[in-house]
Image (cartoon, rainbow, N blue to C red; front, side):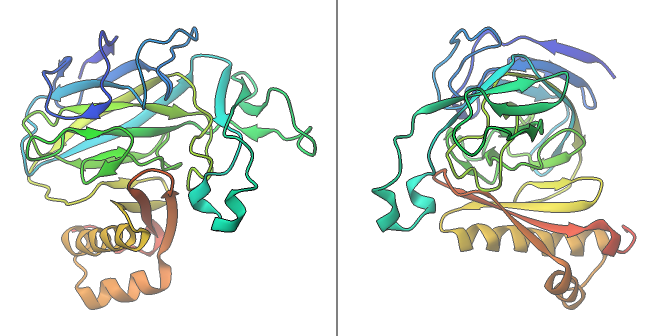
Length: 304
């Protein structure tokens, strides 16, 4: 298996069927440097307009519609010592009468200490003078080309992935995407130094990263929505609005996964999900909301 150092010469603000920027073999590893959500690189130089410029697409040999693209997030290293957020809650996550009292949504700078693995406000506000958060890298936007020749904005998400902003999409996590076009055409970018559930200020701590991923093809593995696995959990993702529809997509995908790979019928799957499932609200800022349906591996039967 080969390792490719991929330096983009162009970036994309939609995920779609574009000519490949890189071709790799099944199982190869890619190391690439991403821009932040506004298009700034590690030197603070703007290289592309927003939102969320993507590196790619990467063509993976052997990937065909009906397969799954396996994305192992191997490593993520910030490439600069600052990131930024918005300073106020988004208007859609609070009661309507509360919105008029929200402060302006100006940028706030955060300091990233790569040696210590911490993140803190560059100019702390009153009450948060001693706030120090752990560096917790995650990929905000990544996925594959969608079906039917669509080109879908990096501001949102759907079956192909996209701007899901889920804080568990970091090093050590494996994610599967349904392949809709030959080669899968994989994109990634918009990485965060840390982010809470929901992305409720409209950002994580946005910064540039060097990201290492290993891409593999799993033949004839049908799925409708992204799936993932950490050391502790299996996870399915639903992207939609309203929020209950995103939850429905994620729950349905998990029930299908339990049938396909673990041999459970719908009664057994219902019992297990009903008492052991956990839901994460990954994103409630973007046009499509994202819900993660999470099930601890310790409760799963052996895979078939």
